[in-house]
Length: 477
Image 1 (cartoon, rainbow, N blue to C red):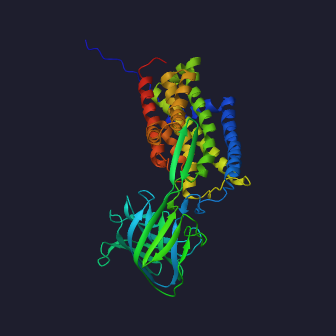
Image 2 (spheres, rainbow, N blue to C red; image 1 turned 90 degrees about the horizontal axis):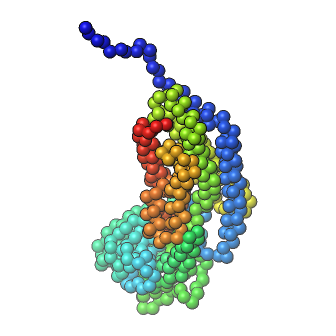
Image 3 (cartoon, rainbow, N blue to C red; image 1 turned 180 degrees about the vertical axis):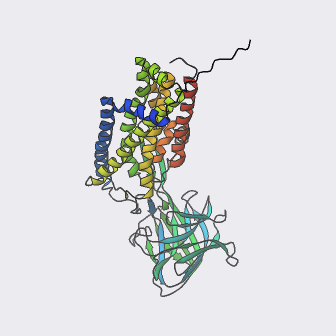
């Protein structure tokens, strides 16, 4: 007698994933207090952004004078140093030997500069020698080309042809090696060409939990130049400025002298990116944290409430594939988080922009701002999925919410009281790295880039979701 195993002819249909997502969205949307919480969090973020912009604007609107910086809040750079120049027209060639340099640290600069005018942010090219980093060609905020590793004495040369400026260096003044060429748009016929020195301030960063103090002492450098030659159009007398775009004045600590063909120039200040400039866009977007905390709580409750009431058994009965249910919930809460984060970020920037006398915010359509705005949505979405996974693993609302918030917020709080190197590593390796997506300005304390930072948080969310899927298949509902 042959026994044939029974096979059911009833087709078991899995619910399409789209219908699962729709069902999970219905669950979320039909809980009034959850929808009210999301809306209130968005509105509170926008309100706080206006207060932040107004308060910060009052504190920074009158700094009592300071280092001249570019007007672009996305590319702040210092325009300082001591510039001794002549006004020349047409093509220009300026040569010197930097004989010696003292003071100012490894990044003290001594060399040549050609710039389009004395106003702040005028196009310029400068080739300088530094005690610790060799020869460098610098122009604007994004050109920083390294030459040889040597220090003074060395020969330097700048040659202008039209809008192009070529920098060269030499050990003997005879054989020249090109360092680089830059094109300075809108240079004009007349330019300022001459000798330049600069020394970055000695900055001290003091951190305590919740606060950070930045103080600086002015550093000075003195360089001697010989074999100075300038060729070009009509000439003018030597003019010295406390910084390239400043008035033609001199104080007791800086100066310019000539004796026996040797030019001695002493100066302070720096030329290049201002790494201590505030990131005003990020200051405003920090208010998105309100929406992020609310969304994390909702993400946890989205699954733990079903466990608490026993409804999860009904859910798994309707859809036996537990993993698909969790992924559908992640899709819904991720979408809610993205919408909440995006609306909070956009509303916060618009409110801060409309605040009279507030922060100097950049154009909202500038790519760094657009990236930070969209990234804020991704930040909240990834944090929500991360919290949902923790809720599935822990199944206790209070504990899961606390773990999610601690993982995201503690590294930032702890970093404020730790040495910068330690704090940076903590922010790179923790879920808090995701907040880097809101950066729009390069600063001294940037731990990780925007794209890499949000990728770290997304990786945490993906790993936590993977563990949650594994756990769902092995634990009772």
